[in-house]
Each structure stands twice: as C-alpha cells, then as structure tokens.
Amino acid sequence: MKSILTDSLAKSYTYDQYRNAITALLKEGKSTGNEQSEALTHYSELNETRMNRLEKTITITDEFSAQLQQLQREYIWLVISEGWCGDAAQIVPVIYKMAELSPKIDLRLVFRDENDALMNAFLTDGARSIPKLIVLDKETMAVLGDFGPRPQGAKQLISDYKAEHGKVDETAKTNLQLWYLHDKGLSIQKEIMALMATLEPTAVQMPQE
Image 1 (cartoon, rainbow, N blue to C red):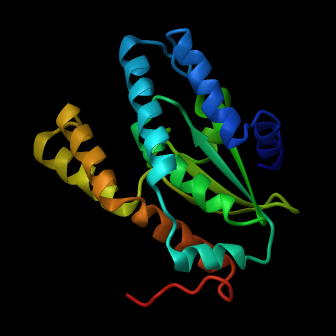
Image 2: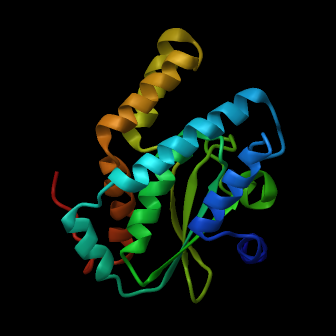
C-alpha cells in the first residue's frame, strides 16, 4: 500500500492545480478521465460552475474551524476525483475549505483514471466510486481512515430512489444536487470531523446527538 500511495502522491495536484487541469481540458472540449463524451464534457462544465459558486459560498462552522486549527498531528488528505463527477463538484470544495484552515493538513488530489491501483484499494461496495478522501499520517504514510463517496444523507437519497425506480436517472441526479444545495456542506463537514475525532479526540470533540 505504501508504494501505491507514494506513486499516487508523486502524480498528485494541489487544489489550484486540480482546478486548472479541469479548466484547461474544457477549453479543448474535453473532460478528465479515460472516457470522452459530450455528456461527460457537459457535466464537467456544470461542475466548473458549481465549484466556482461553492468556493464563494461554502462556510465551515465556527466549531469545526476552531477544531481544525487545533489539530496536533500532521496529515495528508488525499482525494481521488474527476472533473465530470457531480458528487466531487459538491464535496471537494468543502474539503478544500476545511484543509485551508489547518496548517497540519496537506491536501492533495489525484484523478481516478490515472491511479488505478489506488482506486482499487478504496472501492465502495466493489465500485470505483468517487470522490474518496483518504486520511494519511504524513510522517508514516499510514492510512488512518477514509470518507466518501457521499455523505450519509445523499447516499440514502440515491439508495431510496434506486429502490423505487430501479435505476439512477437524470431526475435522481437533479434531486441529489438539490440535496447538496440545501445541506450547504454541513453533512460533509460533520462526517469528516467525526473521522478526525477518532484520530484526535482531545482536539475534536463532537457534540452528542
């Protein structure tokens, strides 16, 4: 696993480099990833707009902001993503905003299709679902936990829709985007901070439900 992680980190991007790579491809009429289609390019264009908006509007709660600034250990947050992924467009800007608050977090991003071995090590129910946040100990490169591809509420919405309709169609995707819009990134913050609380219980104290 350590060699896989080292290889992927060598090919990783900062958040700004990740955004610029997606933008550059869109100017050529392309999306990220091995597969190219008009649909994927269209989704990438929509996601570009979403990410621009979220970077301006997403706020991290005061409580989580304080806790992120109090982290003691040093981490790498390694995110597997692609520009065409609707969930990634909603989640990655929140992860970025969180990482920016802590000098202890080094955020790196990789494209799924460029990192098969890494993706295959972090499948979700056997699927190459993204985005996936992998939390690493920066010193030892040990995997401490992961989050993704969706917060629980979004996961439940899609699961219920699929159970009722037998498939995930454009209506389901629209409903999912509306869920993210109303949630304002709060569920993502809560679930990632719950993970961090298992690593640093003194710095991150989650409220009792």
